[in-house]
Length: 453
Image (cartoon, rainbow, N blue to C red; front, side, top):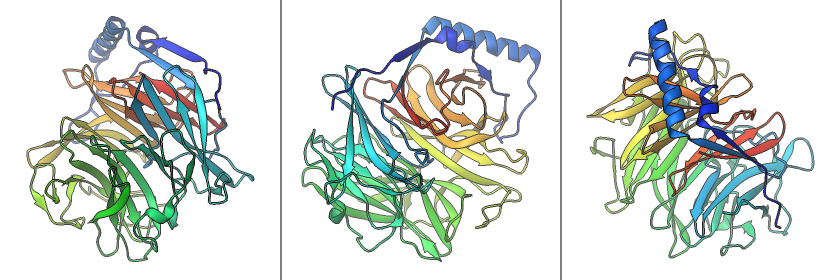
């Protein structure tokens, strides 16, 4: 169904500069450093001059379909883009269900001319699928394969596969759950991405055991139109795996980001880790290229954020100690760059935002934002001008979604990424034109916004 073009708001960088929030300078170990008045003034002037010179603009549109308040997660991959006669954008999201405790997954598609259309996910009876709300679990992930088929994984918290796809571009999005391996397993946290050759890779936590819940990697062979298991990539006794993100580089290597928790499950995780898979050899490796045997364990993983003082493996969801909660990755060529949230013993209970990158056989972490509490929502992209752009959501405020960039002197500067939009969740994907596509749920007002910058 064709819909009118949504209203677009263009915001110049000069206007954004007025909304700039300067992040306190930080040491590499994550502790906030005292910033002098001179440094603050200099950073402000630099940020304003840069913004004015580049004249960057952010376009924001409200997606013209009602969104259910359950449409909120940290781990999901709900955005896909495609370059045809122009840029197409696909947003997977939860619509309101028949009751307040249910939702109906759908896809909102934006054409290059700005026209939106809606694709409901259809069950075997031909009706729009409906599932119980389960915030943080029952949210959709989406990808488009090389033949133009759309694939959606929706509403699974230790459930059998709930998988929908089109048979061809423009077709209905129908139930294809029977095509997946591991039919008897409970699936949670499915994240999916498209490889340069049109294949898809999917990572998920598989199983619902009380003593272990491993992570598995799957591949969609685009030419054969078939799913298969690549490997159980991570798992250990008394541990659960929490997939965060995955991307495929130009050489076809798959980059995985995941966390560990005490089994069976908890809202607070530890030992944020990275793993790389090379389909041409079938081998797994760490960020330095050293071979790793899968499934990796917390002790054999390439760990980005190690345990710190006072950190405990706990399944208590009232746990207040150090922990990781949410992370995302991007690639600079084939080099992974990571954004993540970590609550340390000295953070006053706040989850600060960090940026990490590999250096030799280790990882270096820098504090991006330590100015207050953040929500479990992150994004990161790699830009030719700004290099890393880290997106995060503050715990309160009128504008809550911010984009942080780093200057040559190491100072991080944040700008509102969605001025005037009270979004409280976030997902980001970069399109083939080098633009960041922002997926912005406002759960308080049941609204979803599209942004491009």
